[in-house]
Length: 258
Image 1 (cartoon, rainbow, N blue to C red):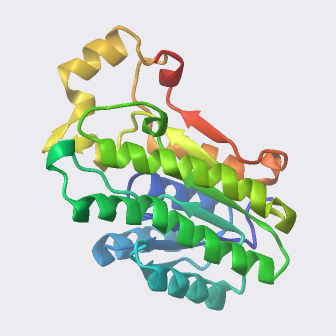
Image 2: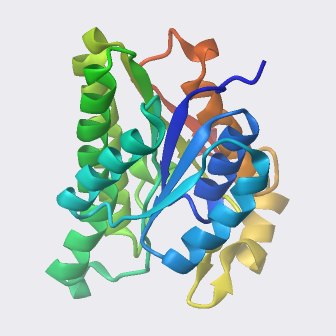
C-alpha cells in the first residue's frame, strides 16, 4: 500500500531542487501532487515528469508572496482533487547581500517568500483541511541557517529563523484541529541554490577542504535533494503521528559541530 494513496499534496517551489524531489516522491507514493511556483517553464517541465507516475498532478502558477495568489492556489487544488492533506512550504529565495547595502524592497521580497508565503499557505491550507475535518500535515522547509550567523545572508537567515518560530507556534495552536506542523532544516544540499555568483560552492576548495576533508560535516559530503524529500515524506506520514512542532536537521551532522 502506497503511503499517500488517495491524498493530495501541495509543494510550493516544487519544480526544482528539494521541492521537485519532494513532489516526485509523493507522486511515487500515490499522492495527487500539486506543484506551485512562479516559473511556468519550470513548472510545466516538472509536471510533465510527474504525469507518468500516476495520480492527478497539477501545476498552478503561484507567487506565494501574494496572499490572493495563495488563496487561489488552495481553492484550485481543492476543486481539482476534492481535498488537501499535506502542505509543503518549500518556496524560498537566496542571494548574497551585504547588510548595509541591502534594500528594503529586496529584504521584504525574501520575507514575503519565506515567511509571509509560509504563513499564508499554512493559514489557508489549514482552513481547507479543517473545513473537511480530515486533519492534515504541514511541513516547512527551513535551514540550519535559521539558527546560526553567516555573512552576506542576514535576510535569508532571519527569515528562516522566523519560519522556525512560525512552525512551533502554529503547531501548538492548530493541534486541536488535527493538523500536525513540523519542519526540516537542510544543511549543504546539492541544488541550484548552491550556485552563487555562477560558482557552485560545493565544488570549491574551501568546501572540500573544510567541510569534507576536515569533516566539519561528519558524513563528509553534501546532501541530495532526495534525502531531504524522504524526511519530509516521513513527517507527513502516519509514522510521524506523534511528532509535532519539531524542526529536524537534515545536514549530515553539520549542526552538531557548530
